[in-house]
Length: 259
Ligand SMILES: C=C(O[C@@H]1C=C(C(=O)O)C=C[C@H]1O)C(=O)O
Figure (cartoon, rainbow, N blue to C red):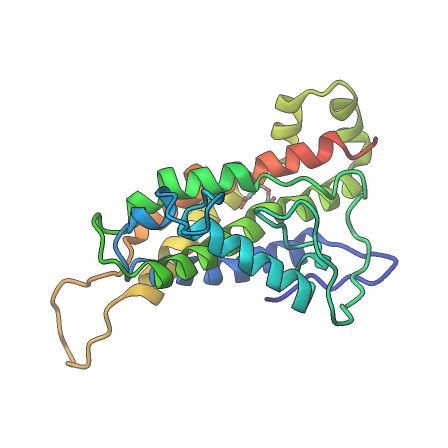
């Protein structure tokens, strides 16, 4: 995953942040396309089927917890300020040396984490929209695919912290009074760029068309195109959930920006 390259004097630009968000769209769209191979398979994430007595996790929750622990220990995943865990309260230390990430985010605001909301939104609202209903019993692969989607979506939404930091640095006086009076409406207005949002929605629709079309080798084939995930739905997922949640992260971050 491409990261914003910032040196210790921490040069940030809205353009470089937006470029990373554009690249992350590829990951999000591909992960949705991959997940659409499987039906809903709700038993994996709804039923507490763990055989370990005293553990009431669903298969998916158990899987995500275990993978997060391994990723923290082996690759220091959460040393990267772009990554936010779903379950780990105490992040285990990496057993290998980790990259020293420059301190870009404001320390008191950097811990904003809305993954509980993202988890609920993903399983209750998004997933039923873009996968077929039913069960095929392929729960292990489904859980792995869900984790890919969750991590891609979570990274995208929490990137709002970087967006908010750069917007604050570009116009601290504009933001400071709204932060002091905890005026979330004013903050939302300041950080919103409707034209950019429209462009994002159009672009992800196009990406879903391009990445998810069935490829045919018959030249001149004029038959209707089939898509693995409806491109309009991908645009809607961005417009109704991913962009608003990113902006909520921006507001949460800004509210703690001058603590
Ligand atoms: C992320 C930004 O902040 C807001 C959120 C956007 C998004 O989530 O794509 C787009 C434009 C802004 O309204 C940005 O300005 O790029």
